[in-house]
Length: 389
Ligand code: NAI
Image (cartoon, rainbow, N blue to C red; front, side):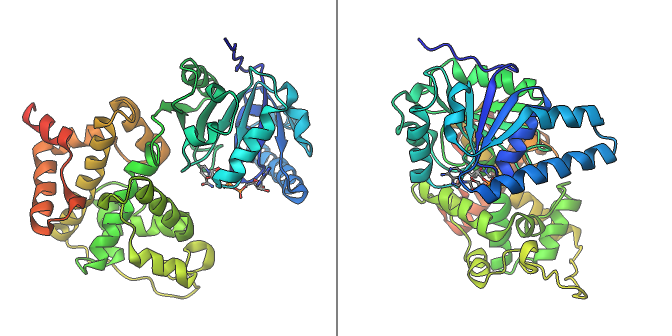
């Protein structure tokens, strides 16, 4: 039986020195782990090292960390150009390109280098951990450890055992993630895990409302912020995430759930991607960010705003109950995930009790009766629980 040793004294290997790999390396090194970072692109590695140092110096300038702490973090991280240096690592977190075949190849190569007790983790946001693990001789040592962007700031980490993963591993990872001062949640290896599955209607239902002409983008954003208390409206948020990224996640989750209507992507967003209107990063998405452009104003009609909010929140809550019903995660972890991973003002299960399960159910049932679309079917657990309230 393997003895996994993943503690603050373990050597951690990170593969991929991009946004996520660099951030995860900084998190581990800050808490005292020795970290090796590898990338197959020499230029990316040099850039990552320079960015890490300048980022840490900015934290010193802002007095968020001391110069000594900055030096200690830098000393803990080594940027290496050969994967063979990972032979002494106890835990390796892969954060390379989101491509199943490439990831499988990297995992196969890794197994030939590391010792048999080394844990191999993937930071994938959409691929199946079980499928990545299938490339390994010892799939029991493979697990998902999914950070959110930026990893240094976002507290949530989803831990995802695949079906062949050693049953002790999730708890061991949870302990280490807590030591890294993050918030771990454990979830089943299902498409989108917790956050990227449950959050889909925040974007999808908002786009549907706009496609149908029920309200415009500014009004939907206003309603979700003012009435719902969300930090950003769905259109501002997808513009920030980038439509290329957000659309692909929706499309992947939809396909992986065998084309369930609940996750169907929006043509409105597809056209934005086709046009290259990817959001803030290209200067145009749902909004136009060119200097001097007057932004659309919202129709601040409280009655309309409430209808928009009720519809989107009911869809989100329905998705949270579906995840709970299918044992994707515990009620506590589902609520933690949405508040700590995507900054929702409240956990969705707790929110459902505040709004009243009967109210949520009737919003969904009305939508279902009117549209006769499977997309709006109320979840069976929500249906049952409302009777016991
Ligand atoms: P990125 O594009 O910023 O960095 C990926 C790095 O991996 C690049 O430096 C690239 O040179 C390197 N790389 C590619 N193939 C490699 C290989 N075969 N061997 C070694 N290095 C290789 O990507 P990012 O955004 O850091 O994403 C990495 C992973 O994290 C992906 O699986 C992504 O789905 C996941 N993720 C991304 C989030 C995000 O918001 N960007 C959030 C959570 C997870």
